[in-house]
Length: 131
View 1 (tube, rainbow, N blue to C red):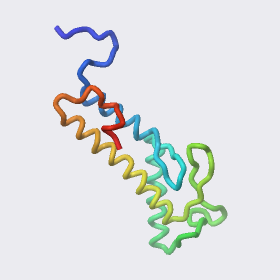
View 2 (cartoon, helix red, strand yellow):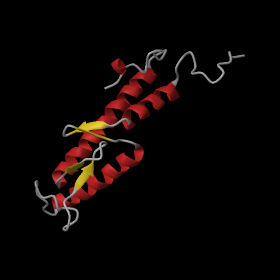
View 3 (tube, helix red, strand yellow):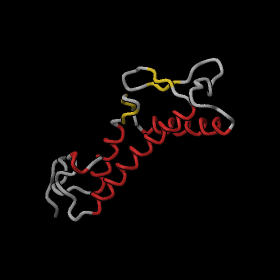
View 4 (tube, rainbow, N blue to C red):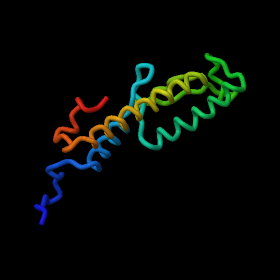
């Protein structure tokens, strides 16, 4: 019979613990243009959606510096974690989405590498294992 842990984390981390740490780190956000941006699943879905719209607008001729690519009556901006508005042209939105995608990808790869280790290091939450 396995020893009882009374709700404590297992003595030897498993893949689900690594996944939880990965998800926590991704959601903590990323830096773009000197600002912290949220990266919860909802945020990432929204970023991808707007990057798709921006890509279509670029194909249709949207230029760098044009902040009215999404709505002709209002400049486009993204709201940073500090609630400030960061203006973005369509090419800026695509670049922003690439930074977000890279942020997530680096964490996914780091988590995968940790899960391949036998055993998973006890200090898998240490920054040394993550981007």
